[in-house]
Each structure stands twice: as C-alpha cells, then as structure tokens.
Amino acid sequence: MAFGGFNDNSRQTPMSDINVTPMVDVMLVLLVIFIITAPMFTHAIKLDLPAAQAAPAPEKPETVSISIDGAGRIFWNDSPVEQKDLGIRLTAAAQKKPQPELQLRADKSTRYEVIAQVMATAQGSGMTKLGFVTDPKDAARTNTAPGK
Image (cartoon, rainbow, N blue to C red; front, side):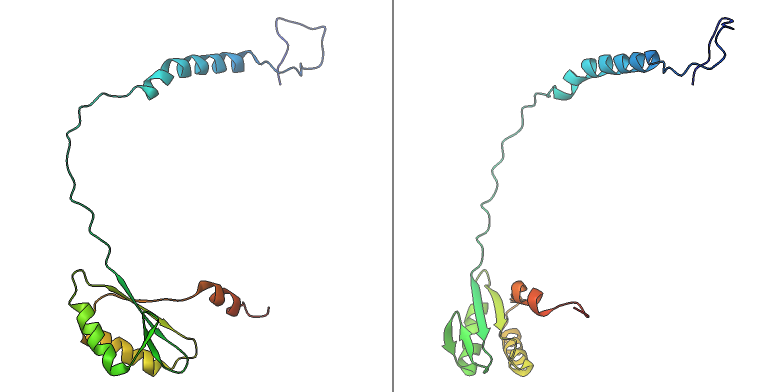
C-alpha cells in the first residue's frame, strides 16, 4: 500500500495502486545478466583426449535352469533328470569357465525337502551362483491385503 506524497492534502484515502517500476527494473537487470551469462554455459572446452582400447567385455556365462514340479520331479533345462544324475551334471557345470548361473524354479506345492536336497547337491558339486525364479504376477494376485 502506497501513500501519497508531497503534501497532497486533497486526497484523504491512501493510494491503492501498485508501483511496478521496481519490479520491472529488477526483471530487466536479471534479463541482462542471463543474456550475458548464457553463452558461457554453452561454451565447450576443446580437449585432445587420449585413445585407449578396452578389453572386450567378458562373455555372459550360460544359465542352467533346474525346475522342480509339484510331484518332486527334477528337470534340467526342461528335460527330466534323476537325483543321482543331477549331481554329475552339476559337477560338470561347476568345472566350466565361467561357471554357469543356476536358476532354481520350484512349484508352489513342492516339498521343501526336495528343494533343500537340490540346493545341497548344487553346493556339494561346487556351484557358487544360485538364484530363485518366481512369478511376480501370481504373487500379486495371491497376496492381498487383510480385510479385502
């Protein structure tokens, strides 16, 4: 709220007009600063970088998929395998360089005993990379919040 000036006694109420002159002055100063500094942001430094050759990326190891169905049958990359043959295959896979990653897929209704036996066989044969595969779509449908 601005007040009248220079002994203006004819007006009894305060002036309600906004004085925008200081705001325009500040905006013009900022505009000039941005116009001057903008080319500095786009200025690139010219460098002569050294050339280097990187070693080729290591090849990704193969993946071995072991599936266990609800009845406890074991599958090696979708082909059935017996428990005794599983140890032989895992030992052969553990000797490969790089060692393949073991992905364990088990049915919801599979007994934990069978899964534990497969994991123990894998560990005993020298496998170091073991991952569990799940289906997030089914997990989202079966896990509902209480009260819903």
